[in-house]
Amino acid sequence: MKKIPLSEKFKIGLVKTAKDFIQLSYYLLWILFDPRKFTIIKKDKIKNILVICGGAIGDIYNVIGVINSVVAKYKVNVYVLTYEKNKDFIKNNKIKYANLKESKEMIDAKKIDAAVLIDPARERKIFDGELFLKLLKVPYVVSSDSIKLHPHKFMRQRFPIFATRKIYPIRANGPKTFVNLFNILSLKIDKPSFYFTKEGENFSKTFMKKNNISKKNNLVIVHPGAGKITKALKEGKPPAHLWPEERWAKLIDKILKDKETKIVITGVNSEEIITKKIYNMIGDKKRVVYAVGKIPDIESLASLVKRADATVTPDTSMAHISSHVETPAVILYSSASPGRVGPVSTKNLNIYHKDKAHDCRKYACKYCYEIHMKSISVNEIYSALKKIMH
Image (cartoon, rainbow, N blue to C red; front, side, top):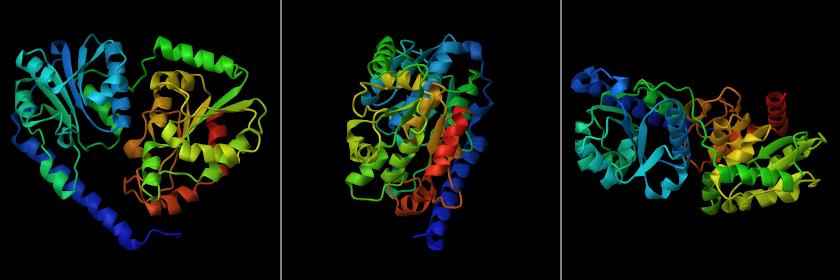
């Protein structure tokens, strides 16, 4: 398979055009009929902010990263309404988790000055009809909305027409959109940041010492897996974001030709379906630390990444963590372009072959894997890595 069929390209183009048309229609409806757009936002009136966000884990990392930057710069209290499973990602004591009931009570008590809505249309469990109406009581509401064309999901979408400001075009870049939502509240920040914990810092220092990694070493973190890759593999489907395992191994062998370089392979336990294959194919393992499933939490991982010279990763949470801690990354993209989902960073090098890309935004796709991911060579990644490290 060398080319994506024209029929497939046409289908993807048609879906994109339909989404763009619907998004534009909703935005124009807001422009024409919503009187709240004339509200002047006064930054000094904003003390308590409610952020509503469900989304994938990567979305939560980015949203929390943006809020970290906001609370570091401004004297505001931020409450995050998200799924209960996501509350453990909130480590910064200036950010509070709020469930749906608590959020409604704060709005009724007029304790919320501004609400930031991140794709509320797709999050019916944390954004119900009652909350939709209660938001009319909030002085400032800013929103980004995405479109789902699946018939069932499309019918369940609820678009908050009554918003003070809306982002358009919608989710042109996920992290950048999150930054812009706060910027239009006059809470100006440039990029997300990470909140480091003492436990995470202690872990990374101990890890470095235990594995004899010193400042004289060039430390490269290689993160081959992703939840969307393992999901596709377990379902017996072609993983859109997988770079072939043998190429990861060849890349590591090539990096290790520099005698001062050490490599740490990271990932969660479920990703060993990929990482064990890679590790077993590496020639000389003396300067390779296999840390898959051995790093206790995101904060410990971030503290370790902060001490690295570079990371190599597919488009997954690691790409955003690396950018949040300002470690340059070589990022392999697949079913979505860097402009849509890439981190906010000037230090990264993005690997994306536009002429080979399918842009289907799916986790499983034979065209993304067979045509795009297999078009990326070991030499291309190695050259990119050398460039960001020197």
